[in-house]
Length: 92
Picture 1 (cartoon, rainbow, N blue to C red):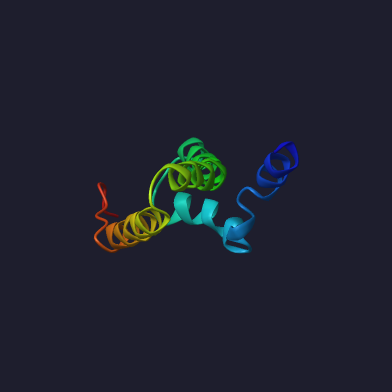
Picture 2 (tube, helix red, strand yellow; picture 1 turned 90 degrees about the vertical axis):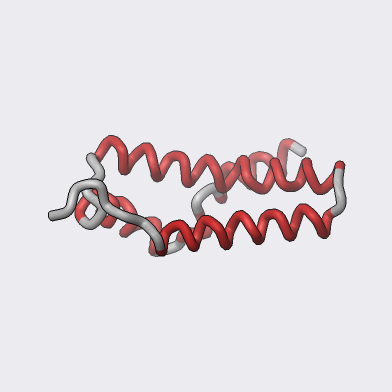
């Protein structure tokens, strides 16, 4: 279990690849976030890449794996759709 935890922490955010490099400047320049808020968003993204699999794994041990996989895919789809309907608070 310790080895698995170390590997998860070491790989946190690793799936972002090259996108991880450019998401910070994108949040600041294109989305108008402050540097502090962009840094916080990246930290939450990285934390979620560790906590998410642990949480869904824990749930799949207690409930139907098929149901948990479907719920994870539904949440992912809703998150992606929410980005398509994003509105800016401060145009310009």
